[in-house]
Image 1 (cartoon, one colour):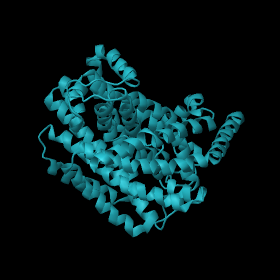
Image 2 (cartoon, helix red, strand yellow):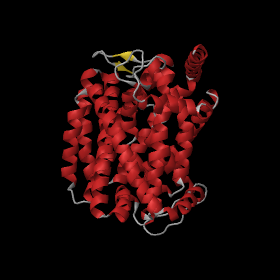
Image 3 (cartoon, one colour):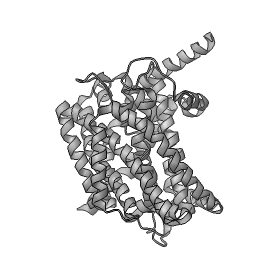
Image 4 (cartoon, one colour):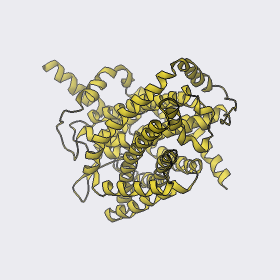
Length: 450
């Protein structure tokens, strides 16, 4: 039964989901006139250049807090663990397809955030809430599709929490921390934060995310530079493996091109969330004057998440050679072993354990918030408190079950999330373009007046 379920999931990602993700990304890129490339300097100025500036408009949290809350779910174990897992199951060529998904994903994520803010509402607690379920219901006028998205995402969060927890627990085991000790520590810390709501989450993530991302990036870069002579070979493995089968050797079981594409697309989408629509749930609470201005932060997330952090993780395991020595079932330990090979067992193992724990913490905190919002949308505010407890319990699942089997369940439910969301984004593309044009027209007037 599990083998049949795995085959169905692989088929979904190789055909319907891949066509919808890449095809939808191309459609939105054309609709927005390739703006992620033509307006790249402006996007950088409006995001990296405005991190500490206040914005005018309505909302519950600052644009940067919204971005870091969304980044907390995208920069997580998917960046450190998901990348070697993609390589372990699809070979180095999976990274090429991860990059492709990211480039076209910029237009998708920008569009999702625009729609999320345009159709956001205030809940019973007086906080702004939004996301695909609202623009599917109120924008596309398909409430059933909105409910279907909310259901798929509510279910998807459970294996997602387990996957994140398993990543931290496997890494902690490399320095002899018992799995149940790690699991219980995660439950306590996550529980303390998620019970504080989006404002507490925003305050925690705006401090945690930049520190952990920079620390990991610097240490991984040191390891890569120590093995700099392997960088050209790593590039060759990525480009060659994207279009040709990779033979089995060492701990790597080998992969066909179809498996490579599926691994890169699935892990890429899970990493940067473009096409999933989930980051709009955090962005919908942001203070902003134009939906499109906040949408630019979605591109900022993909630049940081996939094109920087994921790429560094890929070269970390490729240049050190650990990808060919360790099987997919233990892929979570690859980055730790890679760092230990250069910086020693104590520093390398301890640093990666702390780093992944921080990544996992921030991710679980935010995705539980996402799951709560789906339960709230479907069943009311009280239901969100019930699923919070269920999600915390799935941290224990991550300590018990095999990571590869959890990933299959994650990918199956993720396919449902993406398909329902992408229907809304593509069908509402005219509204996205109108909002985008309105913003850029206002920016042009500001420039001419100044």
